[in-house]
Image (tube, rainbow, N blue to C red; front, side):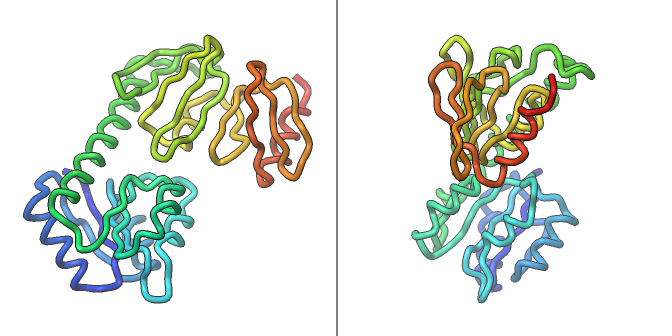
Length: 248
């Protein structure tokens, strides 16, 4: 049973969504509800939900402000709103789905099914990593990647860089091939050896072994060995330059 928290500034909207979930989505249970950002944040910290239904316009508050409070978003986000104009920003914060009010049963069930699949893949990937013992204390050995087709064991040395794509992440390899993983880039960052990989941008992680050149700029950008250009964000520039300037 997946735990759900509903955050909306109108009690009628909360009651309606709760009734739809209880009546048509048997795989979930509503753990808590909230009508403001602070209460919602406390509920999430207390209940550690699998899914959060989040309204965007909350009186004088904004649902995105809640997301930005978390350095690691461990739950799936399903935005609920009467407005279409927030869709692009919603997917920039890696929301799983975006439901327009009034919420239909089919759309709600589809969102829940998508969330359940995503959660199951993440849990299976974490369990597989433990069972296979794919990483030792020296960050050596292969790692198990949960792709859309199944699992793939790869040597981190064969990964050139990773690129975020919403709730998914593309892995690009030295042989020119790529795989799409059903996990966010933040989870990939924790999976990869920190000794050889660096997150240079909110959308990119690079294997430092394949960085050929850094081009100066406000943030600047990297040239990788295969001719790929990767941006470096302003906020990560200083840490990146310190990392590459350390003695080997």
